[in-house]
Image (tube, rainbow over all chains, first blue to last red; front, side, top):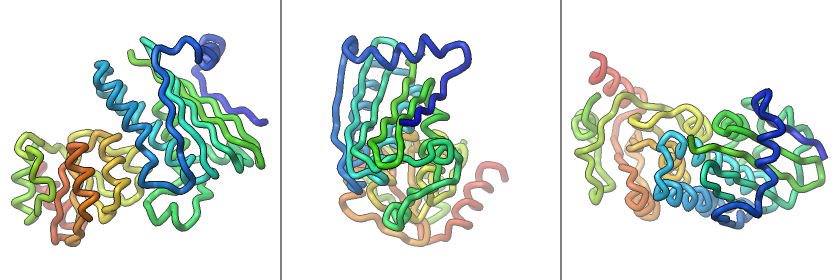
Length: 163
Length: 113
Protein backbone atom coordinates (compact mmCIF):
# COMPACT_ATOMS: atom_id res chain seq x y z
CA UNK A 1 0.00 0.00 0.00
CA UNK A 2 1.14 3.53 -0.76
CA UNK A 3 1.02 6.02 2.11
CA UNK A 4 0.69 9.79 1.92
CA UNK A 5 1.25 12.00 4.97
CA UNK A 6 0.78 15.73 5.40
CA UNK A 7 2.18 16.67 8.80
CA UNK A 8 4.00 19.87 9.79
CA UNK A 9 7.79 19.27 9.98
CA UNK A 10 8.95 18.43 13.48
CA UNK A 11 5.53 17.12 14.50
CA UNK A 12 5.74 13.73 12.75
CA UNK A 13 6.12 11.38 15.70
CA UNK A 14 3.71 13.24 18.02
CA UNK A 15 0.94 13.46 15.41
CA UNK A 16 1.39 9.97 13.96
CA UNK A 17 0.93 8.78 17.54
CA UNK A 18 -2.44 10.61 17.65
CA UNK A 19 -3.63 8.49 14.72
CA UNK A 20 -3.25 5.33 16.82
CA UNK A 21 -5.15 6.24 20.01
CA UNK A 22 -8.61 4.96 18.97
CA UNK A 23 -9.38 3.14 22.22
CA UNK A 24 -8.83 6.29 24.29
CA UNK A 25 -11.46 8.39 22.47
CA UNK A 26 -14.13 9.98 24.68
CA UNK A 27 -16.82 9.59 22.01
CA UNK A 28 -16.88 7.38 18.91
CA UNK A 29 -19.45 7.85 16.16
CA UNK A 30 -19.82 5.59 13.14
CA UNK A 31 -21.78 6.13 9.91
CA UNK A 32 -21.97 4.01 6.80
CA UNK A 33 -21.57 5.73 3.42
CA UNK A 34 -23.32 3.91 0.55
CA UNK A 35 -22.04 4.21 -3.03
CA UNK A 36 -23.44 7.19 -5.00
CA UNK A 37 -25.95 8.09 -2.27
CA UNK A 38 -25.52 11.86 -2.43
CA UNK A 39 -28.73 12.59 -0.56
CA UNK A 40 -27.46 10.89 2.57
CA UNK A 41 -23.74 11.56 2.24
CA UNK A 42 -23.16 14.42 4.65
CA UNK A 43 -25.28 13.06 7.48
CA UNK A 44 -22.21 11.87 9.37
CA UNK A 45 -20.49 15.24 9.02
CA UNK A 46 -23.64 17.07 10.01
CA UNK A 47 -24.06 14.96 13.15
CA UNK A 48 -20.44 15.47 14.17
CA UNK A 49 -20.71 19.21 13.53
CA UNK A 50 -23.85 19.50 15.68
CA UNK A 51 -22.29 17.51 18.53
CA UNK A 52 -19.08 19.59 18.53
CA UNK A 53 -21.12 22.78 18.38
CA UNK A 54 -22.96 21.69 21.54
CA UNK A 55 -19.58 20.96 23.15
CA UNK A 56 -18.59 24.58 22.47
CA UNK A 57 -15.92 24.09 19.79
CA UNK A 58 -14.85 27.42 18.18
CA UNK A 59 -16.87 28.23 15.05
CA UNK A 60 -13.87 28.57 12.70
CA UNK A 61 -12.48 25.22 13.89
CA UNK A 62 -15.96 23.78 13.46
CA UNK A 63 -16.09 25.07 9.88
CA UNK A 64 -12.75 23.39 9.06
CA UNK A 65 -13.90 20.09 10.56
CA UNK A 66 -17.24 20.24 8.70
CA UNK A 67 -15.67 21.06 5.32
CA UNK A 68 -12.92 18.40 5.56
CA UNK A 69 -15.34 15.79 6.78
CA UNK A 70 -18.04 16.52 4.18
CA UNK A 71 -15.50 16.46 1.34
CA UNK A 72 -14.24 13.08 2.53
CA UNK A 73 -17.76 11.72 2.87
CA UNK A 74 -18.61 12.85 -0.67
CA UNK A 75 -15.36 11.26 -1.90
CA UNK A 76 -16.36 7.88 -0.48
CA UNK A 77 -19.86 8.15 -2.02
CA UNK A 78 -18.52 9.38 -5.37
CA UNK A 79 -15.45 7.23 -5.91
CA UNK A 80 -15.80 4.01 -3.91
CA UNK A 81 -18.19 1.09 -3.80
CA UNK A 82 -19.15 2.20 -0.29
CA UNK A 83 -17.51 2.60 3.07
CA UNK A 84 -17.78 4.07 6.54
CA UNK A 85 -16.84 7.12 8.54
CA UNK A 86 -15.58 6.80 12.12
CA UNK A 87 -15.25 9.94 14.24
CA UNK A 88 -13.11 9.73 17.36
CA UNK A 89 -13.54 12.70 19.65
CA UNK A 90 -11.02 13.58 22.38
CA UNK A 91 -10.97 16.56 24.73
CA UNK A 92 -8.52 18.51 22.54
CA UNK A 93 -9.05 17.11 19.04
CA UNK A 94 -11.03 15.04 16.57
CA UNK A 95 -9.70 12.16 14.48
CA UNK A 96 -11.96 11.15 11.59
CA UNK A 97 -11.33 8.01 9.54
CA UNK A 98 -12.91 7.17 6.18
CA UNK A 99 -12.49 3.55 5.15
CA UNK A 100 -13.96 2.25 1.90
CA UNK A 101 -14.11 -1.08 0.12
CA UNK A 102 -12.16 -0.01 -2.95
CA UNK A 103 -11.37 0.26 -5.81
CA UNK A 104 -8.44 2.33 -4.50
CA UNK A 105 -6.38 5.30 -5.70
CA UNK A 106 -3.73 4.44 -8.30
CA UNK A 107 -1.61 7.56 -7.77
CA UNK A 108 -2.23 9.50 -4.52
CA UNK A 109 0.16 12.36 -5.44
CA UNK A 110 -1.82 12.96 -8.61
CA UNK A 111 -5.11 12.84 -6.68
CA UNK A 112 -3.77 15.63 -4.44
CA UNK A 113 -3.24 18.01 -7.40
CA UNK A 114 -6.01 20.67 -7.39
CA UNK A 115 -8.19 20.18 -10.49
CA UNK A 116 -7.33 16.51 -11.07
CA UNK A 117 -10.47 14.38 -10.91
CA UNK A 118 -11.66 10.96 -12.01
CA UNK A 119 -15.31 11.76 -11.22
CA UNK A 120 -17.94 10.38 -13.59
CA UNK A 121 -20.78 12.35 -15.24
CA UNK A 122 -23.29 11.67 -12.45
CA UNK A 123 -20.92 13.05 -9.84
CA UNK A 124 -20.22 16.13 -11.99
CA UNK A 125 -23.91 16.72 -12.56
CA UNK A 126 -24.25 17.21 -8.80
CA UNK A 127 -21.58 19.93 -8.94
CA UNK A 128 -18.88 17.72 -7.47
CA UNK A 129 -15.81 16.44 -9.33
CA UNK A 130 -13.88 19.71 -9.43
CA UNK A 131 -10.78 17.90 -8.24
CA UNK A 132 -10.69 19.96 -5.06
CA UNK A 133 -11.89 17.43 -2.46
CA UNK A 134 -8.55 16.08 -1.22
CA UNK A 135 -6.83 19.51 -1.46
CA UNK A 136 -9.67 20.99 0.63
CA UNK A 137 -9.25 18.21 3.21
CA UNK A 138 -5.52 18.88 3.36
CA UNK A 139 -6.01 22.63 3.64
CA UNK A 140 -8.48 22.36 6.53
CA UNK A 141 -6.85 19.60 8.61
CA UNK A 142 -3.88 19.70 11.01
CA UNK A 143 -2.60 16.30 9.89
CA UNK A 144 -3.66 14.06 6.99
CA UNK A 145 -2.93 10.43 6.19
CA UNK A 146 -4.01 8.54 3.07
CA UNK A 147 -3.30 4.88 2.47
CA UNK A 148 -4.35 3.25 -0.80
CA UNK A 149 -3.40 1.35 -3.92
CA UNK A 150 -5.24 0.39 -7.13
CA UNK A 151 -7.50 -2.60 -6.47
CA UNK A 152 -7.45 -2.10 -2.69
CA UNK A 153 -9.53 -0.26 -0.07
CA UNK A 154 -8.67 3.36 0.71
CA UNK A 155 -8.15 4.92 4.14
CA UNK A 156 -8.33 8.70 4.46
CA UNK A 157 -7.92 10.02 8.01
CA UNK A 158 -7.22 13.41 9.49
CA UNK A 159 -6.75 15.22 12.80
CA UNK A 160 -8.06 18.64 13.73
CA UNK A 161 -7.27 20.23 17.09
CA UNK A 162 -9.88 22.35 18.86
CA UNK A 163 -7.45 25.10 19.89
CA UNK B 1 -22.25 45.27 5.45
CA UNK B 2 -25.81 45.34 4.17
CA UNK B 3 -28.94 43.66 5.36
CA UNK B 4 -30.06 40.61 3.42
CA UNK B 5 -33.61 41.98 3.43
CA UNK B 6 -32.44 45.16 1.64
CA UNK B 7 -30.59 43.08 -0.96
CA UNK B 8 -33.70 40.94 -1.49
CA UNK B 9 -35.77 44.04 -2.30
CA UNK B 10 -33.18 45.11 -4.88
CA UNK B 11 -33.23 41.73 -6.67
CA UNK B 12 -36.98 41.00 -6.37
CA UNK B 13 -35.99 38.03 -4.23
CA UNK B 14 -38.58 35.50 -3.12
CA UNK B 15 -37.98 33.99 0.31
CA UNK B 16 -38.48 30.20 0.32
CA UNK B 17 -37.63 29.86 4.02
CA UNK B 18 -40.21 32.12 5.73
CA UNK B 19 -39.79 30.23 9.01
CA UNK B 20 -36.30 31.73 9.39
CA UNK B 21 -35.56 35.21 10.71
CA UNK B 22 -33.87 36.85 7.72
CA UNK B 23 -33.80 40.26 9.43
CA UNK B 24 -30.71 39.31 11.43
CA UNK B 25 -28.62 38.25 8.41
CA UNK B 26 -25.99 40.72 7.19
CA UNK B 27 -23.78 40.31 4.13
CA UNK B 28 -20.29 41.58 3.34
CA UNK B 29 -20.03 39.93 -0.07
CA UNK B 30 -20.95 36.95 -2.21
CA UNK B 31 -19.41 33.87 -3.71
CA UNK B 32 -20.52 32.99 -7.23
CA UNK B 33 -19.96 29.38 -8.26
CA UNK B 34 -21.72 26.16 -9.22
CA UNK B 35 -18.88 23.79 -8.25
CA UNK B 36 -19.54 22.67 -4.71
CA UNK B 37 -15.95 21.90 -3.70
CA UNK B 38 -14.77 25.29 -4.87
CA UNK B 39 -17.46 26.91 -2.72
CA UNK B 40 -16.39 24.84 0.29
CA UNK B 41 -12.75 25.76 -0.26
CA UNK B 42 -13.23 29.46 -0.80
CA UNK B 43 -16.58 30.88 0.37
CA UNK B 44 -16.71 32.68 3.72
CA UNK B 45 -19.37 33.16 6.38
CA UNK B 46 -21.34 36.42 5.81
CA UNK B 47 -21.26 35.83 2.06
CA UNK B 48 -24.32 35.10 -0.04
CA UNK B 49 -23.84 32.12 -2.35
CA UNK B 50 -25.22 32.85 -5.81
CA UNK B 51 -25.79 29.71 -7.87
CA UNK B 52 -28.15 27.83 -10.19
CA UNK B 53 -27.60 24.58 -8.25
CA UNK B 54 -30.70 23.72 -6.24
CA UNK B 55 -30.38 20.11 -5.14
CA UNK B 56 -30.09 18.81 -1.58
CA UNK B 57 -26.28 18.84 -1.38
CA UNK B 58 -26.25 22.61 -1.85
CA UNK B 59 -27.83 23.00 1.59
CA UNK B 60 -25.22 20.71 3.16
CA UNK B 61 -22.40 22.67 1.50
CA UNK B 62 -23.80 25.97 2.81
CA UNK B 63 -24.23 24.51 6.27
CA UNK B 64 -20.70 23.05 6.41
CA UNK B 65 -19.17 26.27 5.07
CA UNK B 66 -21.17 28.62 7.30
CA UNK B 67 -22.91 30.43 4.44
CA UNK B 68 -26.10 32.15 5.68
CA UNK B 69 -28.05 32.47 2.41
CA UNK B 70 -28.26 30.80 -0.99
CA UNK B 71 -29.53 32.99 -3.83
CA UNK B 72 -30.85 31.00 -6.78
CA UNK B 73 -30.54 32.96 -10.02
CA UNK B 74 -32.68 32.94 -13.19
CA UNK B 75 -35.85 32.15 -11.29
CA UNK B 76 -34.73 28.70 -10.20
CA UNK B 77 -37.20 27.25 -7.71
CA UNK B 78 -36.11 24.74 -5.05
CA UNK B 79 -38.09 21.53 -4.46
CA UNK B 80 -40.02 21.04 -1.22
CA UNK B 81 -37.45 18.60 0.22
CA UNK B 82 -34.68 21.12 -0.34
CA UNK B 83 -36.73 23.90 1.29
CA UNK B 84 -37.37 21.67 4.33
CA UNK B 85 -33.67 20.87 4.66
CA UNK B 86 -32.72 24.55 4.37
CA UNK B 87 -35.22 25.49 7.08
CA UNK B 88 -33.94 22.68 9.31
CA UNK B 89 -30.32 23.78 8.83
CA UNK B 90 -31.15 27.48 9.24
CA UNK B 91 -29.95 28.41 5.74
CA UNK B 92 -32.02 31.11 4.01
CA UNK B 93 -33.10 30.18 0.48
CA UNK B 94 -33.95 33.03 -1.90
CA UNK B 95 -34.88 32.90 -5.57
CA UNK B 96 -34.54 35.84 -7.95
CA UNK B 97 -35.57 36.20 -11.61
CA UNK B 98 -32.27 38.00 -12.34
CA UNK B 99 -29.22 36.38 -13.90
CA UNK B 100 -26.12 35.62 -11.86
CA UNK B 101 -24.19 38.54 -13.40
CA UNK B 102 -26.86 41.04 -12.32
CA UNK B 103 -27.22 39.51 -8.86
CA UNK B 104 -23.52 39.86 -8.20
CA UNK B 105 -23.37 43.34 -9.76
CA UNK B 106 -26.23 44.69 -7.68
CA UNK B 107 -24.71 43.37 -4.45
CA UNK B 108 -21.31 44.79 -5.38
CA UNK B 109 -22.84 48.20 -6.02
CA UNK B 110 -24.79 48.15 -2.76
CA UNK B 111 -21.64 47.28 -0.79
CA UNK B 112 -19.07 49.42 -2.59
CA UNK B 113 -21.04 51.91 -4.67
